[in-house]
Amino acid sequence: MPGDRLRRCLAGRRSDEGSSTIEMVLAAPLLLFFALVLVGLGLIVQARGSLDGAARDAARAGALQRDYSTATSEAQRAAKADAAGVCVGGDVQVQPGGDWQAGGMFTVTVSCNVRGLASMGLSVTTHVSATSAAPLDTYRRTVR
Image 1: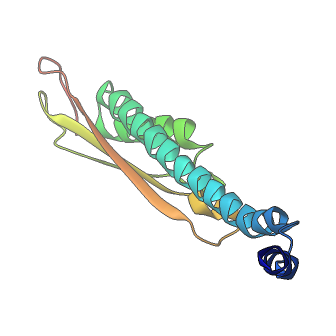
Image 2: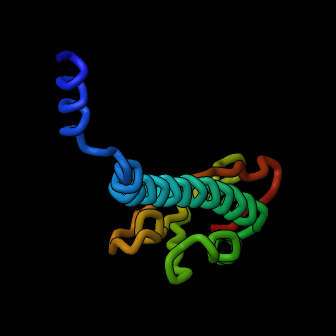
């Protein structure tokens, strides 16, 4: 009898109740981990943008000064003020450079360690740096 065979076949099948719960228990940690990785990478991108701005501001602040020592100190002050909230522990390295002559360029490299993926609990910090240059006025006196 075909009806008996169908009933036996259906009776032997297991119920699928609870299978979506198991799938969710397995998928939720992976989705959460993926979201945290995206947040960590977003923090690195945001830190890179902030350091680009800090380098630009530091180069401009230094280029407006008349002597190299004042330019260096003003560039460090401007970079540390801009990048203080981005860097781990507020530790910002500023390296001025360029040729300090009328018509030359004042170059600043700002670098520090940012949290990035360390926000997920990993002990990984990322070193980010940015460089910018600003022109020195051609018609003013500069002192090295």
